[in-house]
Length: 325
Image 1 (cartoon, one colour):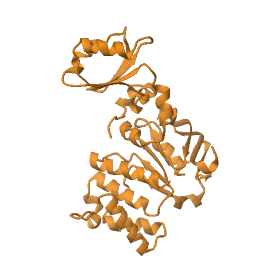
Image 2 (tube, helix red, strand yellow; image 1 turned 90 degrees about the vertical axis):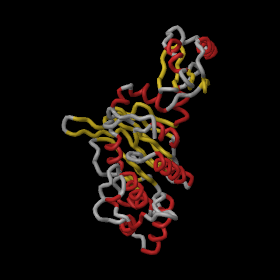
Image 3 (spheres, helix red, strand yellow; image 1 turned 135 degrees about the vertical axis):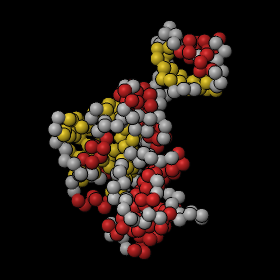
């Protein structure tokens, strides 16, 4: 992959604090013009990796390049848009419009240009509508999700080439989460690169071109979403969605180890891995024999949630992994 086609290159990076190794030996490549997910449970090393990419932390070993330059090169700063997990600067007595204006001024935008861009982003993110204008509201008076949208607006004012978001879906309700997803996909269509960390698998699956899954400071899966799904899928995987009391009626079939090797239970939907030699037709016949009512039954590729479980283990869910976004 040529240098111009790579937005971020992390090569064998390590970072330790006292007796704790936060990042062990992380290597990853973020292609230009893609949405890249840095995934993992809380405490996996995602935020530490991002902070090293941004030169906010110095790695103990390894190298990092951003936009074809060493990550410590100050000339790349104005090409980046960064929205951290915590809205640290997005507090105090700032009013939303004033906060955005300050962000624009910090990037050297003149007032007329900044005001035009602020109008665009306030409207794009639903912070200014026909019935409500949040630009005059104090940031501290807004919900956490609204604060994040204000911060994101400030992040985008200077038209960054590379956008880095740390846990962007934290605190967002479904409506605002969808608005952010749509915006990220628009950025990709504009040719920008977006990298974001998250433990929300559903959001990552809907948005990402490629992902790296980090667990205990190490990359345990890395590549395009299509390639990972193909690797972890296979002819013996079936997705089933039940109706009514179908889930309860299916229990005996799902526990039949002469047919089902394992399954991922998601309530009214499961992903089933058949044992070698078993067929999806056998499984379907067994379910019909139990009078199980089905909404969906098809051969499928692995979900990102399932890939995560296979590479990280079920403890990842206990540590903060979510299948919903």
